[in-house]
Length: 226
Image 1: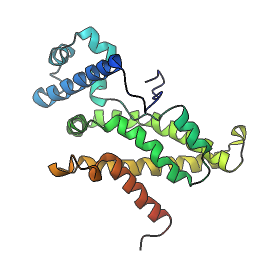
Image 2: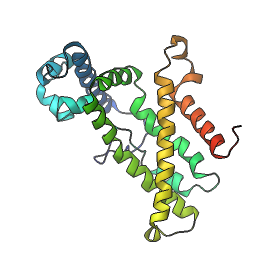
Image 3: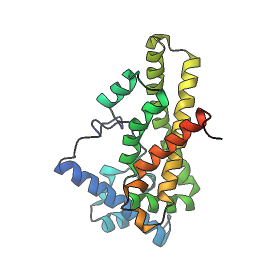
């Protein structure tokens, strides 16, 4: 992941060093969430989290500036490079349809760990202040998505980037907000499904639910729903 929070290549398999980094990051997050469930937020210290995650406090701070940030976790990030270029350049389908594949990469990268998602949601529901931080952290994603959608819409309409006006940005923001709401719907459907038989069934995977939610949104937008 780059310093600006964007994934450099969402399709590339991570190397050994990256896998170790991700495993350590996950261990710290699971540790802090488990400890908060067991002892409460105020009673949990960085030393406790470090011992539970089997890392040093110094390593903890290499990953997170505070226990609260470890609870909040990482917001979704848009893929970078060719995927974004392909989205902006695509002309053979509506903007909303093109967003499905782009956003599938983004959300799957952030929420594929269902155990961690469930645990984090339990803690955030008990701590509205941390939930507010989590929501605020998604604003960067929303702003980045709006910018990319505006670039696509400008290209569709033959408008130079320098000539993008408030009206186009407003429409791009609307598309972004609707898309994010659709993602939240799919995410909730996935995370609230407690049927163990569905966990290994690709028809009920996060990707499948996102695609189904976007299809349903398309029907609503085109008034196909009666």
